[in-house]
Image 1 (tube, rainbow, N blue to C red):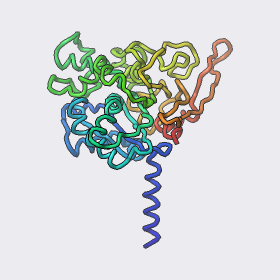
Image 2 (image 1 turned 135 degrees about the vertical axis):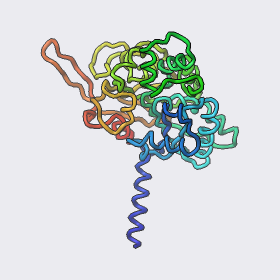
Image 3 (image 1 turned 180 degrees about the vertical axis):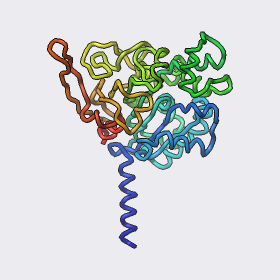
Length: 349
C-alpha cells in the first residue's frame, strides 16, 4: 500500500515537472473559436472549450490556461471577466515568480499583447506582484489582424463589396454566415483595429513566432489573404511584420518550404516580434497539433528570452535537384516526423 502511494506521488510530481518548458511554467491562451458566436458560452463551458482547444498537444504540458469566449471583446468582458481574475490568481500563486512562458495560438497572440502591455500596472495597482513573463511562443499569430475578420464584419453589417465568393470564404472559416449581433472578437481582429491594440508595449517580452503556409479550405480563403497564408492568417500577421503587406515568407533569405533564395519577406517587425519556425505544409490549426505535416525550416534558428536564456533549433542544409537546376534547402532536424509544436517543446527543454 505504502509503495503504491509513493509510486502515485512520483507520477504526479513527474507530470508536474514535464508541464514546464526549460523549467518555466507554461500558460496557454487559445485563439478565436467560431462556434462561440452562436453558442455564446459562459462560465464552465468557457473553461471546457479552452481545455478542448489545446487537447491535441499542449494541454497536458501546461500549468495554467487563460480561457475566454469569442463572442466578447478583448478590452471589455474578455479582460474584466476572464483575463483579470486569472492574472490575480497567478500572481497570488507565484506562478511566474521565477519566470513563465505564454503559449498562444491565433487570436491568443492579440489577447496576450494586451496582457503584456497592461498586466504590470494592473497588478501593481491591486497591490500584487506583476507576472514575470520571459517569452511567448506564438503559433499562427493573429496579432497583426485577419483580413477575413474585415470581410466577416462587412458581411454581418451588409457593408462593403459582398459577393458569393466572399460569403463562401467567410462561411468556410466561421461555419456560418455572421450577423451584426454575433461578431464579438471579430471586431478586434480587423486588421487596422488589431494593429492599434497595445501596438507598442513598454514590456520587452520576446514574441517568438511559428508560422505555416498550408490551408484547410482548398485555397478558398487564401484569395482574400495577402501573400502566403495558413488558410486563416496572412504571413504579415503570423510572422509579426510591422506592416500589413503581402509577404511570401517570414525571412528575406529563406522561403516557407526552406529554399535558400531571395524572397519577399518583411524588413521590419512589430516591437519584440521574432519569427522562428516556418513550414509550407502546416495550416492554421496544424501548428498546435500533435502530427508532423511537412518539413520545417527556420527564419531564425535561435532567439533569447527576456532574462537571457534562449531557444535554439538544429538545422542542416541540403541540395535538391540536378546540376544547374539544383537548389539548397534549410531543414530543421527530425521535422519530417515531429510536429511543429513538439519541435518547439523539445528545443525549449
